[in-house]
Length: 71
Picture 1 (tube, one colour):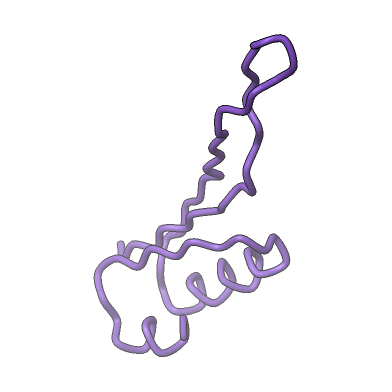
Picture 2 (cartoon, one colour):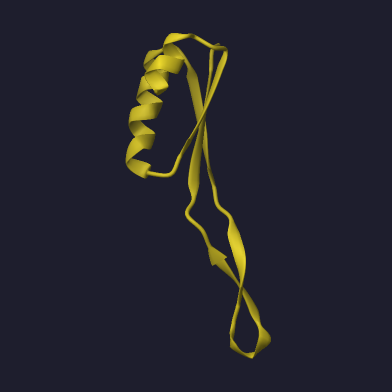
């Protein structure tokens, strides 16, 4: 899918990936297509009850967001 998008040569491509093993191939593909690539990891947490009325943050799976921009 990412190859098809990059082949259309848009000015910006944004990709969200949950699996870390897909990050490096996506970065390499975008760079090979002429994009400058940046990335960030986004993490969220949900409120979860603890015994005794306390509340904690329960982590959810992080997502890596890559942005490719044409110079």
